Image (cartoon, helix red, strand yellow):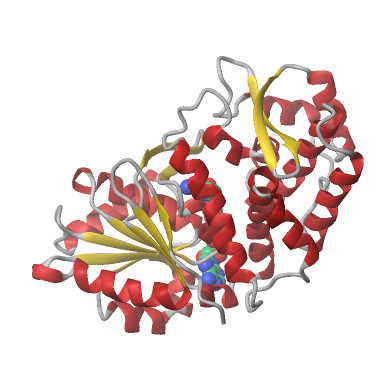
Length: 365
Ligand SMILES: NC(=O)c1ccc[n+]([C@@H]2O[C@H](COP(=O)([O-])OP(=O)(O)OC[C@H]3O[C@@H](n4cnc5c(N)ncnc54)[C@H](O)[C@@H]3O)[C@@H](O)[C@H]2O)c1
């Protein structure tokens, strides 16, 4: 197998390195050893699925470090869970010199990253992402946080992991729909930042956990996000910047919100959102109908939806879009494609056009 070199994310304070495969294994063992030097303490945070299925990994790599196991799923991403992690840290004597090792998907990454950001005003953490989505998206960029009953990710902090260890073996046990949801974010990365990634995905046979090309695709996708994060670490840019990573997301978040986060996986909702963003870009004369069809065809190869399973209310979808966190001064902010491989942000107030696009994917009045 080809060697996949580490990727450095250049940040204003702490640098963050992403290690892949056998390098990741070796770097992780080293990080555990260093975290315990001079009698310092460390603990692991994970979820029940991983604690049950990866017992050997925890035993071999962490050799008896205390393991904080939380229930799996989005409903765990709460302030109460952050409290649970913090109290676990107190119970096991972790202080300001201690380290957390976070093993899980985006839910555990976001919540345990936030626990690390706030425990004793901030301790370092390492992330071992175990879903494809976490490997290419949520582990990078330092956004940590939890949900409130009023909405998703409403409480959080920027706190980058000291390093990210990508071990593709984890993907062997990941359910296929979760794998495909991660592919939606990879397709998004190609669309907004790298035409050659998009074209490579088109030309390859369907990727799966054991595919020889998967690690290279994961690294390319990480590199696209890393470049954007480096240029706009705290999402302060007036236009473009980190907001570009939201391609398809304003539509996707609206679908998730209207369906109560129970019908579509995040990546599935994003897939429909990507179609809507593509159609909008076509209507603006930026891309062609053939290019929109290429995007749809690639999403379908990963069994991702390109229209709603069941009709949803147009009114509810538009109301959800208006509540999106990325809007500025009451104006909708959307990401469009300038071409395949290049995106931009725009302010948007043409609701009749949005309604027409939503109707195309199955929304109803
Ligand atoms: N911080 C960010 O920048 C960012 C970006 C995108 C998404 N997110 C967040 O990520 C979360 C979604 O993350 P996710 O899609 O990774 O979901 P997840 O963490 O809920 O994991 C999905 C499911 O897969 C299970 N699982 C994880 N790894 C496994 C493995 N190797 N084998 C078998 N099962 C495994 C989990 O237990 C869970 O049941 C959302 O809360 C979203 O808000 C954050």
